[in-house]
Amino acid sequence: MNREILMDLGKQAEQIAECVTDAYKTTMFARALDELIKDQSSKGEELNLPKSARSLSKSQPSDGNNRQEKLKTILGSHLDIGDGKQVLDSSGTLERSLLIMDMIDKQFGLSELMPPEIAKILSQNLSISTTANAISMALKKVTNLYVRRRSGTQGFLYLLTPAGREYLKSRFEQPREV
View 1 (cartoon, rainbow, N blue to C red):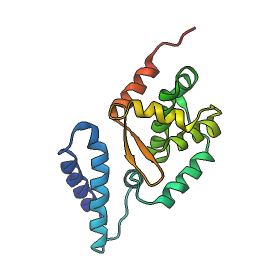
View 2 (cartoon, one colour; view 1 turned 90 degrees about the vertical axis):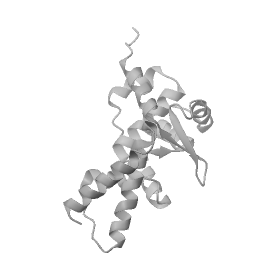
View 3 (tube, helix red, strand yellow; view 1 turned 60 degrees about the vertical axis):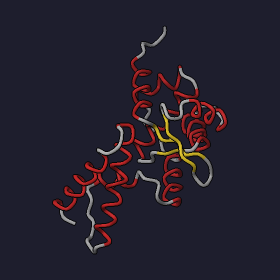
């Protein structure tokens, strides 16, 4: 697939995403682009996506095996916390969960996580003790505000909203207490 076709598909996906509210535009764009690429590929065109477009289309939950492989990679990796250290040190379950969701999406392209997965990442990768139940209760309180959720085969999958990302940014900007 040549660059012109890919750019055209991107423009079509942008037009589709414009039809929804701001909170859903990113997800809708990724989904629309994924579907348009699939349609184009089924016409016999070989797809050669740039790395950024590949990670965008892979962020959609399409294959359970692919998801499990990503989770294994995440659990075996060193997570780049960056500015999130102060949030992990001085915040509660909600902020920690939102931070993990944001980091995993940015670093590994996995945009949806379940509470047991978040708990496992916090405990195994960052040595922060928590339970899936605590995370589930915290996220449930902010559903449709900072996160969206959908039913999966093994439980609810949570997706960070733009408002959730803004909330995290505001937590980074708070001055540290001495």
